[in-house]
Length: 255
Image (cartoon, rainbow, N blue to C red):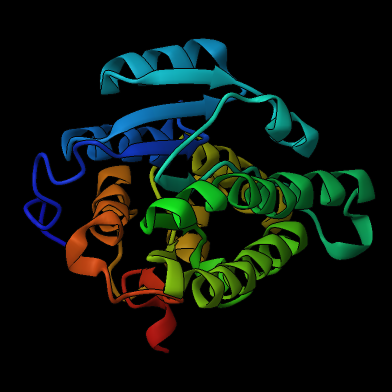
């Protein structure tokens, strides 16, 4: 997607909530949506990071641990655009995977997006316009070993997004997923180290042999590239796109 697709000022008057907005993809989305004119509310567990990201985007921030879904009801939020981006990763084989970590990942990456959508949809319905963009993953479409909680959560958000698309269509609300492969973010940097331990490889070999092996384009994605697609899905040009999953995976799922 070109940076001209969602034009500067096109989202003026809109408010966008971006979860996990303190760094990585979320921060890039906050910056990109602000560049298109939206007022951005960054939600993140990191107070310093959220403040910095909000300042960069000229918006506001809320500090919250979204792995505790009840916190959603305590946040002062009203928005036309919801970007569900917050996530975490834990790498281990299924028979060694900590059940408490599996549950935590489901809360953060499935239940909290549901609660945020449930909270914000009535306002979107009332005005006849809304955009929900779920930052899923290539792992919402395919699986990889050692990531049972992450793959499960991403497959779940795909289904949730489609249900919201069907219910929201008559109200002018679209709901879509973006499905990036590995993005150059702090989360991925941590994954590289974890995958190295799990596979018994060097970190360089993890990037080359594990992360980039399935893709035709042999490089990591940049956060800004994902943010461009998110901004496009929030634009008027994308008004007929809903219930979709948009791979940004360098050809991974072309196999």
